[in-house]
Image 1 (tube, chains in turn yellow, red):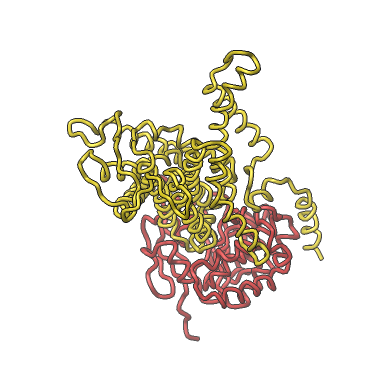
Image 2 (image 1 turned 60 degrees about the vertical axis):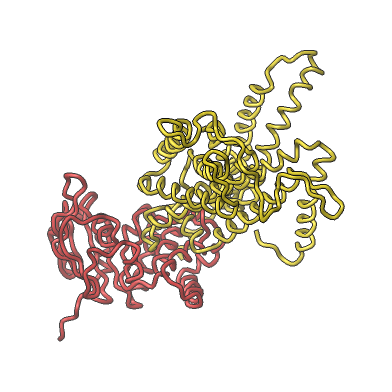
Length: 366
Length: 240
């Protein structure tokens, strides 16, 4: 994604649209949908973090939600009545990110030799271990409150400015969900910026080389061990930040929020949107948060109108449609909805290539 | 004549996979600017030798000296900056990266950006076909072109010693001739080359000296022309 001069007005219009978006959503769809937009931003951050590990470095991670959990629980434990600690956000958020980063390396180090299915199994196990720990750390010493979770978490606030209260600015009322939208948008843009810079850096190229052929990457002089650990660490850090924001926004965390299904969901965002392409991953995040919600709200009333009663429970119908959508996308757009140009080219059968090969052999004879 | 100090000297190198001894103590040396062929049949340990030299495998015993200093404990990624470059078996190109990006990866250990782009142009001059295809994904190239990418990529690291693992594998005969022409050209520019080949005749015709590897041990060595004429090589590898 490079912006030339001609696209500057487009970019400005896009920025303006992002800024007024919560008010448009509020007036058209209602307050609840602004909240959903907030969640979409959190998930976009997660998907972009996972994109580094899966999309760039090609390491399949099925336990990514664990880092989200680490960030969320760090915030919850240090900013709630649980231990009577109320640390400020500027201390808790970076600490959560750092701790998630540490756990990322902790997961990465023993799995350096693994690839593909084997790596997926270990990471899946890791994700479950973290969740089960949170679930059981209430005895003999109560740390996490177990399955009940931690509630009354301090809301996000910066220097006396609380994001959970309504503020009047420039004669407009900004409610909590609006304010969180802007806060999360800021963080999301930061994550996008870092992802973009990484993609076109030496490190980004090293990740892609490892994804393509690890032995060859090693033979190029890439320290594959450190570069792989860095991918785990960077991805985990983004997850940790998102987790901290989630805890402060929600005001409540429990192990339930960090199930395997969540990891799968984030992976779907990356794969459906377009692995390795930042715009695609963002699109995947938006769609996979909004569509299920729309379905939840729409399926019940629609069935009432059509059949006069609820035939299929909207919740199970939602999963059915989700599965169907996955199959359809993989059939028709195997590289994702918005793939990177390279991935698109790779999956497009190109007849000219066969011709070129013929030519090559004949040319060599000349 | 003053004896020339070898660029690479290997003494009693041993490698085993589990309980299997893949290399049972081999000795070899390469002088600066020399083109040396290492020939042998399938499973003789040719690829193992190259991987051990590149640091991709752990050696159980033996000594390796490169440019006078021990190589044994130098990690693989540092051997590249020391001047050793490997063109891996099966080419090992980065299929989903463009030709240009592949070549840039070869210069990963270097930081002299200006010189890198000059070298890139040099590679395109050496392989005009790659210049035409620079924006194309490397995975969509033909086998011969992929081999060109692999060689050019290795040359991008400015090696003193280029190690080639079966560059003729899976290529049409005309393409093989083309690749070998390039190998001679690179050698003429002063780069030392260790060429591993199953195609003994081709390799020995290109090389100055050669080694014959059989089940993990070197059984013959000498001038390439002598080896080419020797009965043992004729019988075993040339089907005469």
